[in-house]
Structures are given as C-alpha cells and as structure tokens.
Image (cartoon, rainbow, N blue to C red):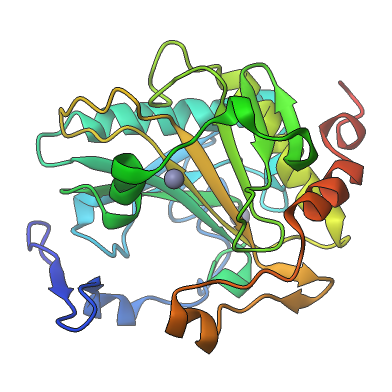
Length: 295
Ligand SMILES: [Zn+2]
Ligand SMILES: [Zn+2]
C-alpha cells in the first residue's frame, strides 16, 4: 500500500454521510499469530517502554495519519490500574502527539480515541488507544464547535460522578447511552497541549471514572472513548474546550445496549436509564481512592 495515496472518501448521495472505504483492512489479522505484539519484546514494541506510540501498520487512513498508543507494558492492566502517575504519562503522550501531528500543514484535526473490549472490535487485549490525524475537521466535532455548548460549571450536582483539580466527569442530561460520561475542565482549555491544562487532575478523573465503570457490573465495561480538542487548522476557535466522550456499551450486567432500527431510522435515541440514576449508581461504585490503596 502506498504511503501517499489519498483516502477513498465517499459521500452518500441520499444521507450526505461521509464514509472512508478501507479495502486494504480486509487483510488485517484478527489475532496475532504468536504472542502479543504490544508487550515489550513484541512486534510493535521491541524495546522496554512505559508509554509508547507508533504508526499503525493497518491504517484506516493514509499510513502517516494513524498511530497507536500503548498505555502500559503490562498486558493485563486496566487503564484505572495505572493510577494517577501512570495515567498522567498517557495524557502526556496524547498531548505530545497532538502537538506533533497538529503542527503538520496537512492535519486540521487530531482525534484521540479508544475502543475497549472485543464487543467494540478491539482485536488485542493489551491496553491501548489510537490517534487519527484528519486533513479536515470531521463532521462530529465540527457540529459541536459550531452549535454546541459545554458548560461544566453548570452541571447539576445529581449528574456529577467524579472531580479532581480542574476536571469533572458527569452523566450528560440527554445521555444517549445509559452510563455515558463526559469529562471536561472547569477552566477554559482548548487542548491537552495548552499550558493551563491540568493533566494530573485529568488523569485522576479518568482513572476514577473508568474504575467506577468496571465496578458497576463487576465486569470490565466495554466502551468507546474519544477526545475532542481544538482543531489544528490555524482557525480561531477561542471557545473550544477539550473534553472526553465515553460511551459504555452495557445497560445491565452482561446485556449490551444496541442502537437499533427505531433509533437509526429516526435519529432519536431512547435511553432506558435516568441519567441522574446512572450518576448515583456510579457515585456509589468504588473509585480511585478505593481501588488504589497505595494512595
Ligand atoms: Zn501485551
Ligand atoms: Zn465532543
């Protein structure tokens, strides 16, 4: 596959929705033939590391636009088990890659994300996330930047789940997924790269929130997580505020929540759990202080 072939982006003439056709990914292996490629000494991590990033060899976009981030050398770790110190190192690498990719003239938007668990297609269990560098601002963040509001200061107490330093986590008032979370700083920070970004506060809230999600049904919660930050197109975006979206997949123990026909057909989601009730359940779970006895 060529390094410089432009992505095959198509716009559906009926819905206007963009799709990247990624034919080459058909050759992607589901499971590595021998050993974990992300463990130290493995294919993608030949040397010892604490947090490591590298270019994805099975990219969905041109090769130099997709990266992977290994959160820890420990294969069986969970994000929350990294503790604040370990999670801060992950945040540091996210910020470093945002700066490096965002500095490129051909990159207008850096999207950091994670799919956790086989339910969301994570083919390798070793804790890791991904980064896509887009040449244009994708539709989802663009709509939020143009029309959305995010005011962590005015979140009602009944929706709060966690806070540390400048950062808070809460269940959105109109959550589309039962235990959906948002995480954002109370101070106006546009990007993880900004000097005012309280990285250890972020790490603490992230670790605490993800620990609570795993406690909720006493099983690892499969989730999708992504970070929205200020675009890197050189635009003004002075109101942009960095934030996390976390959409856990389970609605009850062992039961997945599916976005189904009525929802795709109507564009309206139906959430079976009251957001304030979800927040109360998550507050009652064990968080960082109980899961990290050394602190
Ligand atoms: Zn591994
Ligand atoms: Zn967002």
